[in-house]
Image (cartoon, helix red, strand yellow):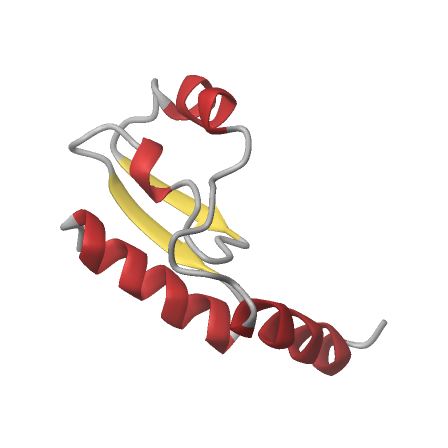
Amino acid sequence: MENEQLIRLYNERGKKLKPDRKIFFAKYRKLLLQETKGKTLEAAAGAGANFAFYPSGVELTAVDFSPVLLEIAAAVTKDLGLR
């Protein structure tokens, strides 16, 4: 699949996400990320589902190719009081 097609697909999926959606595998996300420290890059961050599970003090940079998902991730960041 071409990049443009993938971006369109994820943009459309992102538009259907609900703000109060359940975070799947929350227990495992927390376990996986609990030891994260310092500067961290999350590639393909999507809608920011992992953001709540990073320990305080982590300097997180998150990227994704979908502008729609990045807008949702920015709102999640604001809701969590993160930069």
